[in-house]
Image (cartoon, rainbow, N blue to C red; front, top):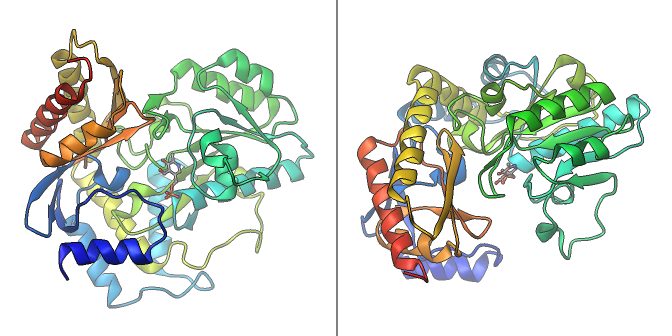
Length: 397
Ligand code: PLP
């Protein structure tokens, strides 16, 4: 099939939901991807924080190949070695006692919402689940009800029992929380919201308030988890532990898998038959995720994320000193945002022309989420291309 045939077929047959770049990708390795013509790109987006260990990591490829010829799927009516090993491993690296597997980030958050509702039911609470304005938790009805107004438009009526409060505003949080609150859900580092790390003091107060009122604290680490911030999970970075934590994206190295981790007490509110999924944690996805976690540990990718992230943020700050079009550079580990004074979409296109895949969040924040295995040389190229492109697109230059 020619490139234009591929694009045409997709446009004819697929729902018109994604505004795709005119690029047909065919092969990938580490932090590099190639299109149909063999043109090479550096991937500074990693499939939106998915390919944390790099594209087609040899350990993931080997684990998937071995598993695919033995057992792909048998449902959750039976035990499998791949899933039980992953449950043990994920609980251990995340610091939790219980794990539930599903297939995506939104699904992990849906499970967390159900858990919070059941917890409220069991403890006689009638209050809401509190979530933060500017957050993003997925595209299902339940998760858009938690999230930004923008994603809810036209999809009403929304589920009730959700209250929104501004991020990093302790006074507002104190006001909205009560002894009736079921749970507080937040991304410790907001991703789609424009790479916004929550303040240490805010997270500490959130934990205190949840303890005082007996509410559950839920972290959505779908984007910031699995090594990206320089720790396996971001809560370990801040040292403020939630009761429930959700993950997906980077966990399967590209194979779809989501997970909810919880304390034994929180997980215990859901009993037999009260939640479940057909595919969740099947052998293939579990084998991939097990290999991802092994690769992160064995290849010290958390340390790599910390060092490369520091270099990246420092370099961007130094090289844009005095640029009026750059409002700031922020992030943790290799989850980095550079806020512009103008819309970043043309910068993304310019970068693509120059051979770098990137993204813009919240209209004006150039978001860099490269694979943690990106080399120094590749990272230098990403910086050069980003800054060149910003210069070329700046309407005031
Ligand atoms: N939560 C966060 C923080 C995310 O960034 C995303 C996706 O971008 C989701 C949830 C939804 O994940 P998925 O697209 O796998 O449903």
